[in-house]
Length: 330
Length: 93
Image 1 (spheres, rainbow over the protein chains, first blue to last red):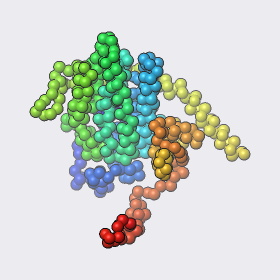
Image 2 (image 1 turned 135 degrees about the vertical axis):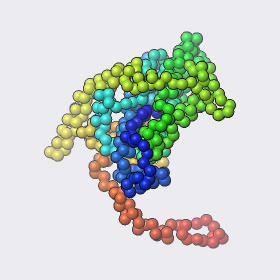
Image 3 (image 1 turned 180 degrees about the vertical axis):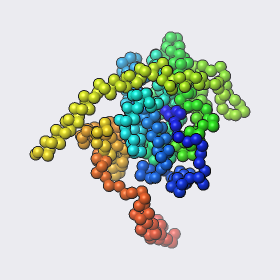
Image 4 (image 1 turned 90 degrees about the horizontal axis):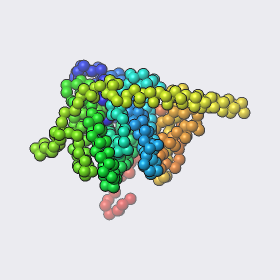
């Protein structure tokens, strides 16, 4: 997930003959599934694309904490509150693994975060939707983390070593997120009142389409997608991943006893996949441009956290300096 | 954060294996690096011991020297146990 419309700077793919000797050697390495490591030569476009994708991925983890943070003080039980805090702490961790991977490419963490705060860097469109009732915590874990897992499992095989290793670590932790989300919904459907059951269906109705948008636009003739696939940064196309997600999610949806807000959704015996309706792409692009329901609030919350924490960071630096001076004097 | 030093983190798991590199953290000093590493890399009992090492103190082999560096060991197949063939009657050795 988490990375949508990543610019590669490519207008079309180069053939092996058109490449410089260095580029050709690089491409052959990628084709042979040898991981690219930080000190290896790489085309500038590959490096830039990775910085864009990994930073976008990291920002998504960090901004992704906010819709859930909304429910920490409102969780229905202490158990649910602890689980939610553990999940949020994981998202912070995932953001850090990814920023570390990004820094191996020579990018600066503060600069990239500054771009996020200035509205110049993207993060996943999904986090610009509000979390209105407790069932949203279930639906976010199940659908949003579920969609992220589909994407991230494939990214474990991405060609850049540090990114791939971060993905392995993240995937290990992510299934806890999805299972705890699904269990919230199961509990509400099994033991809840009619009103609570209606909350579950309401959460699914609101989050269903935005979750499908997480995979990004259709695979058209997009040179970005083609270039990312050739570099094996991306391993599967947006539409393939979206279909995988739908196919594995519908039986879980039915088990809950809920429905998806899509009249065109039905099993296709011939293809062995579910058919589904068209996504509202206008909404997707609007949200990505900054006009979703919560874009401004998310960025303002991030900025506030950074600004109000500045004195803590300054104090830590001052303390470290003082300790060092003392040690030298002694 | 960029003015904070970068530390590489190594964790030893319960099973008595060597410390293994797991990633990096930024911190204002070694003590904070240790706390950050604990929070970031051992949230699920991943380890019993952590090392944090300032990244700029690590000397690494250069990737373009790979051949020069590792060539000498490539043609010494007699350093592997499988080089020595024993009759089946001898059994497992």
